[in-house]
Image (tube, rainbow, N blue to C red; front, side, top):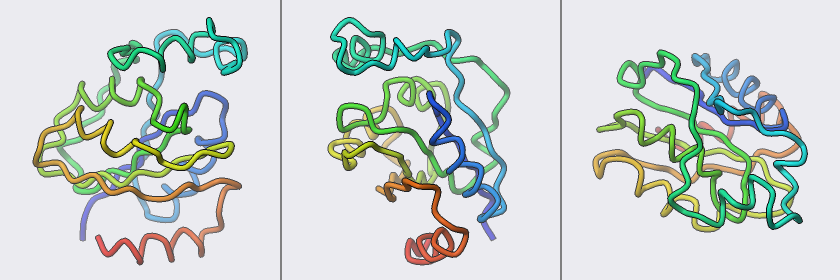
Length: 160
């Protein structure tokens, strides 16, 4: 049986709720990607071209600094990685996390929350931040905090 880890970034708390539910469902440890400088409501105003999130997302090379906790990715087989969709991809802080850890021979299953976007180019974008041996699986948009039964069905269908 594989050892699972749920990793998530949540600027507003929506993705956090889904991650906590998923962690319970798959009996996984959980880890939050935390920015050194937390995002404010103004930072998340995607309609403001000068807001922090807009500036970061307009620069692929942006890597917001994260709190360096002692997560040992190497101890896990499957990493469920969750985040909100921003501009059809994961926030660049997710790339910061991926680039700070070794995902050699790991399976990364993506899940996201979104106000209306799908995964867009998320998988292609995140593949650039991990070794070639890491397997990234485009998972599912999990809005409205799905039930444990719905999560179990989704996981079963992944055939990990």
